[in-house]
Length: 196
Image 1 (cartoon, rainbow, N blue to C red):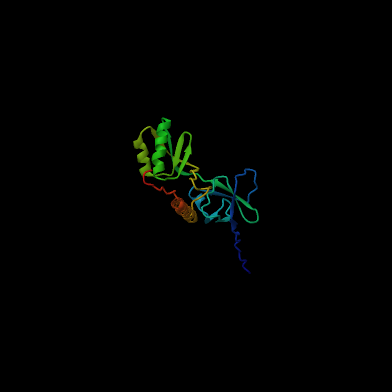
Image 2: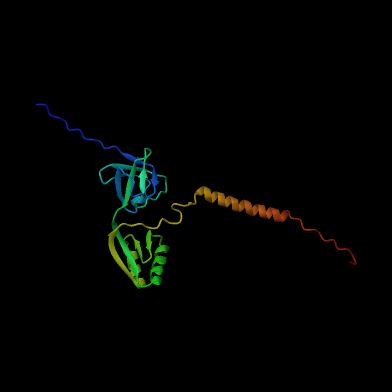
């Protein structure tokens, strides 16, 4: 009796290289459920909900939002879902109290989701204690999708080392040029004649 060998089917890795805007009508080949932290990773392998391995080869500094699409060179698309995760949701008795909470959290540079009537952040016992001490706030522990603010430089113009060099060089060059121009600007001499 000949025993048959069971061959394990290897699922090909889907390598995605760029981000597309959200499109609920788009046809996708897989879906990724990722936390907020996972959506900041540009080079990593994840497993889609159907078991498909998905390799991210996105530009450095990429930030993927929930419902965004990731595409490979052949045009195949993967939809990203914001995976529910533990968070702290902060509400307030007044707009001032909420603004004060946002100020203190902003000083600590924590990822923060901002809504008209609430703030959401990752669980942190120290920050939760601080918020409770501020007064006028209610802090709830929830499990829900987390979409923190991208920050000033995500999706926009980020200052790189080259930018800083260019800026500094321009400043120094401009200052030198201004000084040179001012110094080279001749003031007419005044000749004093006796008796005049």
